[in-house]
Length: 116
Length: 115
Image: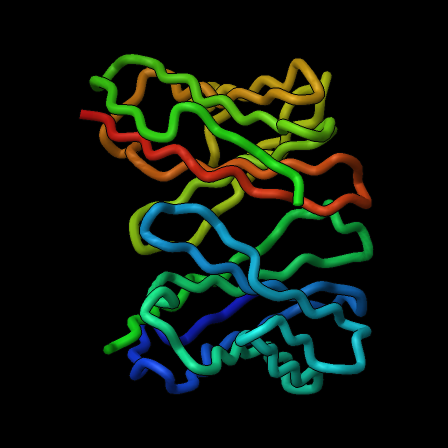
């Protein structure tokens, strides 16, 4: 079974609007971390936001917030006030276990295009 | 955060030749480095885990004789694609961590094109 599922291959959003990128995950480990990365055309993986499985509150980082619904095993990324520079690929990833050095499992990504 | 570099950033080689990609941790000692491969418009797939001073652990389906990984020092791991073919053309990304409980940091990637 896929560890991380991103069902939206491509998304479009109007500049200054908010957009939600979907991510569901599958694990039996009670301890895990969920990540979102942005990958522009240059290829660099840019860390956006992190949510730990035991975190009580949804993570927020500036215009990024993570809608964490543990029972549904979803970790959707919400980008508010979209900017043209937000156009990129977005990957959801999971790391199982307590060790922060464990490997990442990545989803297939969502290509976001911000329309002026 | 910590800095991980890769060299070269882009490389074009002819079919049948070998190419080496370097991954360096610039401001920390990386006991473990991970090598990922990403085909166009696809996700990152883990190829192998490299621990300093020991043999790399390869994921299922990755040919260890074709993708040679060396992690001879705490700041450098190399991936050598031997006898490269056009189907090896891909984006290769490394990540590095200092210890088992340390955060991982990604390199900027290397785009390999085999003609």
